Amino acid sequence: VPEEKIDMSTYPVESIRNFSIIAHVDHGKSTLADRLLEITGTISKTDCNKQVLDKLQVERERGITVKAQTASLFYSHEGINYLLNLIDTPGHVDFSYEVSRSLSACQGVILVVDANEGIQAQTVANFYLAFEAQLSIIPVINKIDLKNADPERVEKQIEKLFDIPTDECIRISAKQGTNVETVLQKVIEKIPPPRCNTADPLKALVFDSTFDHYRGVIANVALFGGEIAKGHKIMSAHTKKRYEVNEVGILTPNEQPTHKLYAGQVGYLIAGMKEVTEAQIGDTLFLYKQPVEPLPGFKSAKPMVFAGMYPVDQTEYNNLKSALERLTLNDSSVTVHRDSSLALGAGWRLGFLGLLHMEVFNQRLEQEYNMSVILTAPTVPYKAILSSAKLIKEHGKDQITIINPAQFPDKLSVSEYLEPTVLGTIVTPHEYIGKIITLCQDRRAVQKDMLYIDENRVMLKYLFPLNEIVVDFYDALKSLSSGYASFDYEDAGYQSADLIKMDILLNGNPVEELATIIHSDKAYAAGKLLCERLKETIPRQLFEIAIQAAIGKKIIARETLKAYRKNVVAKCYGGDITRRMKLLKRQAEGKRLMRKIGNVEVPRDAFIRVLKREPDK
Image (cartoon, rainbow, N blue to C red; front, side, top):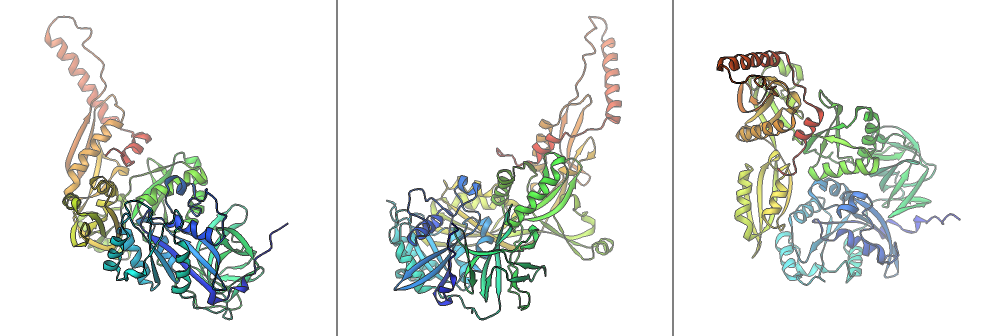
């Protein structure tokens, strides 16, 4: 017997609340979401409700939230039935795009702060996201059941940094469920209902989408006007294609079909979109007879890190292509460009929001589509301002963005190079300040601000070149501060920099895959390291190989891979020295001829080993 579909018309706009939960990593967002789901009876109370909304395998393994998840809760307060739409958001820097996207479908947020840790870098960043979106903010202090919890201190921090009076903070323990009811009541009192009307024409914002093998694309929508039901003919503002709605419903985390969805509600719809590219996130859907002004979409996410991705075996190219298309539908912040390399064949250049994002994406490819791929070392997008008229004409503009080191223009034809910078916020206990300042200076950072949050917490602001922090800054920071410091960054535009392209030469021939763009101060160290690493990975030949790092014509580092040689003097026994010299000289002559005609093939796995980020470095 199919379940009775829920009638959504009993929830008028006035009794709807849309909110999301934001916080720093591990401050208990998903656990609070579990408790809210339990109290409203959306999921049954059992012991096994641990982060119900983190559905992906990656999320369960790492214990982090990667995708924002939606759930609808029904709650009656003072005799009125309310519909609460909850969006659980990720906490890591790399996914702040998910957070800003979720906030567009909300009217308010719950800001969770850990009573033990206090305010951390991400708390600050997420607060300002919500503040700029003019949402009402409910501060919640979580984990008061821990024995080191100090809610008074945290309340003072919240008051000092965010100007929220201390009596507005709600103290809860999400794990034990203490005081969580109060949060729901506050949500109903403090957060305004959505401003929209069922009588208006249909207007729906697509804020997320997933791909189902059987039903095609499932789009998560927030309705800003009108109503939608099965059989409606709708049209997309972005692709101008027409669809017929097959199913609408709400997510209570699992899909629950309903007869209709009305203005102000958040749900999902399935409309026979076959192609993954059709459910563009940020798109507006409307009835095709009643066109509306499209909603302002989202700023598309700005990729901060680029890496090449190649199939391990070229025959897998097409499978990898379809896996990538499906995964980028679900994770729209990845940008994809076709790319090919001599050594690794055809592949893609992918843009990610950060390193964790890159690792999670790779892990999802392996787990959800069992594709194993080669990822090259991450690079950041540089810009060059051209000065030669010929190049400007060729590109049609005087400023180009360089994603791939192979396209790096020559110094003679460029007036200046630009590198991306970020504004980093570090929140740390004050005893680690010395070490952290030294670390930041090593990374060419400029200090912008330093503020004591309370007696023993400091907030530092630095302007970093992105390529200095992209690989291992976070790890270095954590190990310096015994894990207490937290770090968050936002884009801060480009600044001019002294960049050079470093080539790797094997016997005088450049190997284009190994070229890197690097700041001139760091070139010597990096060149030496690369040469040493190549010396270990390239197999020895019968002739000697010179491995050199060069900037332009100038060689900055060299390693020599010695030749294999036969022992030609083994047959001499005693006799004159000239006899030995003659044999050795003949061998050296042969090796020299061989080196002239022999060319060095760098085997594929040597490339992979050199290009991969070294975990021990």
